[in-house]
Image: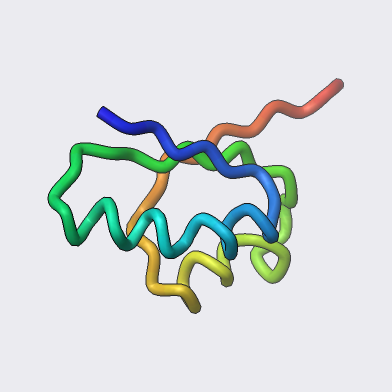
Length: 63
């Protein structure tokens, strides 16, 4: 299994061809998104516009 770990918008954009290729080759993979940005406009929109599959989101907030 391949883990693709992303945290920033540039990483989402740069890794999108790799994610697509994993899908084309039928590789067992998952996307772990660390959620650096908490705003829809700053992050999730890139997954939708680049037509990337669903991901696992993980977010830590300091209290």
